[in-house]
Amino acid sequence: MVGIPVLAHRLVQIQSVIISKCLPEIVKKIDERLKVSVLDLNKLPRILKSETDAMATFIKIYENDKQMHCDARLVEMLDKLSKDLQASIKFSESFLIEEIQFLEEVKGIRLPHFIPHLVFLRLLKKKVNSKATEHVMSKMKAKFVEKVIEMIEMEKITDYTCDPDFITSYNKLMNYHAQFSNLLTSYMSNSINVEGYGSINIGHLREVPENTRNQAFDLKMMMTAYWKIVLKRMVDCLALQLRFFIQRVVNMEMEMEIVSEVMGGGGIEKMLNEPPSTSKKRERLQNSIALLQESKETMEQVMDGVVVSFD
Image 1 (tube, rainbow, N blue to C red):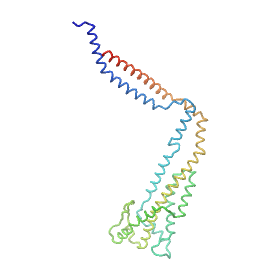
Image 2 (image 1 turned 90 degrees about the horizontal axis):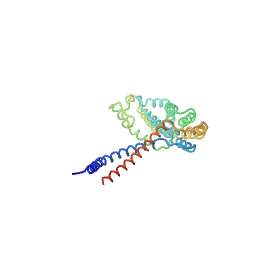
Image 3 (image 1 turned 45 degrees about the vertical axis):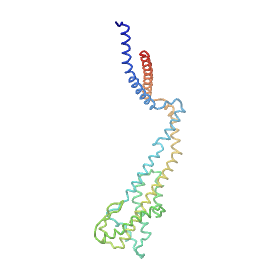
Image 4 (image 1 turned 180 degrees about the vertical axis):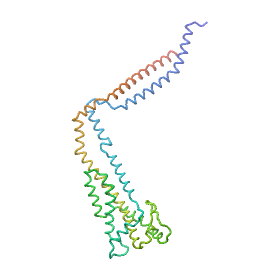
């Protein structure tokens, strides 16, 4: 007959086996919760213990803040400006009419099939006045307006570029001249498709003398190719001038004012005081981590005791 002590010992062994199967899962959950709490604590701002720490943190924020130096925002604005300007290059419904009017205004004794330089320059001035001023001037601050005006005036004075893209673009557009002439003489269609510009109405040009419309076509394609260069040059110049202008203002005026405001207005001392909400959250997480670590250690000791007792 088995005695009571033997039965009690047997029951303890059975309970130990049951508990030993549950304890690893409990420890695992405690460990997972501990990792989450530690991660949340590390996400909180670092405690600033001295004015030196506060000043170092301020300088780091000032150097990295996108809103402070605006480099990224400046690039975004210039990219958008470039896209807006390039998108403004479109052929109107009255295709070549403007060019024909300019040719009529400067009629005189000249070689056939030769476009006077004056015609191109006058048309260029009109485009600069109507488009560049509208798209560029509206985006500049008052202190920068003078530089923008100078740039626009320079574009109106001289039609020059060493950019090889001009010839490439001009030749590509002039390749449509044969198709343009055939469509007008054969009455096959009242429109022509030009890559990048879509379908263009040309039916109204059949009554125009062939020599005049050929010169107008040449002038239009020359202006279209050159205008892309002008817009690209404007954006490049704006980027350089604007970046230089902003850097000079920041270095000479704003940086000293910002540092003076922070140092003189008690801003550094205020940075040492942690917000109450952050302080409470930090305290709660620290207490939770301490309790979880203690619980984990206790459970590990219990598991060791259970194994030893079982053995």
